[in-house]
Length: 287
Image 1 (cartoon, rainbow, N blue to C red):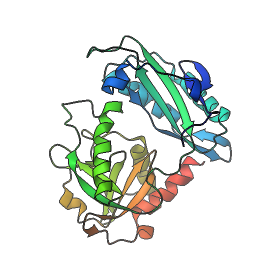
Image 2: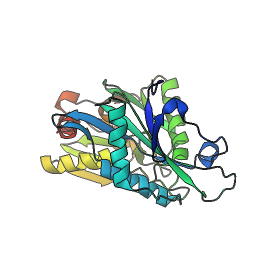
Image 3: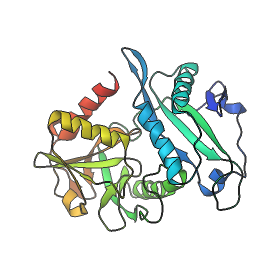
Image 4: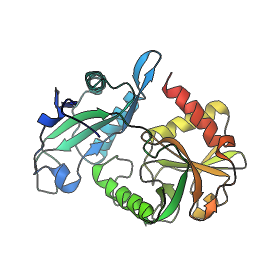
């Protein structure tokens, strides 16, 4: 579903078919998850294909590398231009883009001697679908902020996400919600959390979560709509008193919850702040 015989990717300054591209089986990224990536979306707008917040995403890619000591010697504007070319060569107008910084062979637990960059893209709908989600609080927690760089979108960190999602789906739920190491609400396996109560929105503060670009966009929308947002530490009990809740992320976009474990959110999604923000978000990305 991600590529075929004709798919073109960008790899270290060159464009080639995905089926012609190889990677070294001794690479640090393959063995230790020592790499970083981004998830970016492109939308078909009245003015042509637009990569949403391209600069912000590639700046975060650079920041992720710097946080975990991976050299980043790539030019961001050149990467953005390469991204548009990948979309053009694959005839993608609405799609998902995946840049990946990966390391050369190195079996030592040390910084890489050489790094590479790949950019690919494919057609992809909303990652979590279009229906409201039934969420389960995971038995897994987010990594302790002193155990790794939580702010980095690092490959190895997503083992935690895979375990949490798999557990939730095996129990019959649509997705998981993880707490942090202190028992406070954190985020989903690949999305940030917001919940509504008494006409206000609440979201976990930064520090134990990924600083999502869609999260930042939601905060911008709330400011424009005069919706108060409170960022703090919250317990699961706070969520179980909420009127509605939603996840936001580049892959998921904005998707509401129907319930969390045995608790059903009482406010109909169509009348929630989340739905209002989703409508604004979809207009924004397609401007």
